[in-house]
Length: 176
Image (cartoon, rainbow, N blue to C red; front, side, top):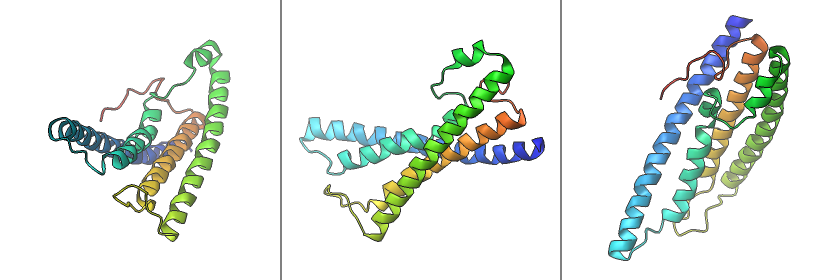
């Protein structure tokens, strides 16, 4: 059981690593786009017609595509002081319960976002901005990002149940 849990959690970690790299790329593109927007507005009195629309999509992708990786690294905000004050078995049980609750919330959000993307695809919905972006594209990316978070939460729960180290315990943080 423990070996299987390690393999499953490891596979999820690799998927979350890919999500983190995608978030890094989105962040770099967002930064470059905003630099060009600032320059073009200040120096040329011209604003990019796509900057507002795509900056929102890129910001959302940056925030959520890397969330599974952040969870594994212990970078999400949690109340570690409460867990540290409890006996280890009780802290693990509370962590498992909180992780299950978060997993339920993330599943609800991921399912809702997936349904929204599918509906936008089916109805050929486009944004009201001048670029007329098919909304299914950014919505699908956001839904996939939330499914990565669901997988990361499932891996965390699996690690807790199997007694494997968590990011904030024995495992050294991985580097991108």
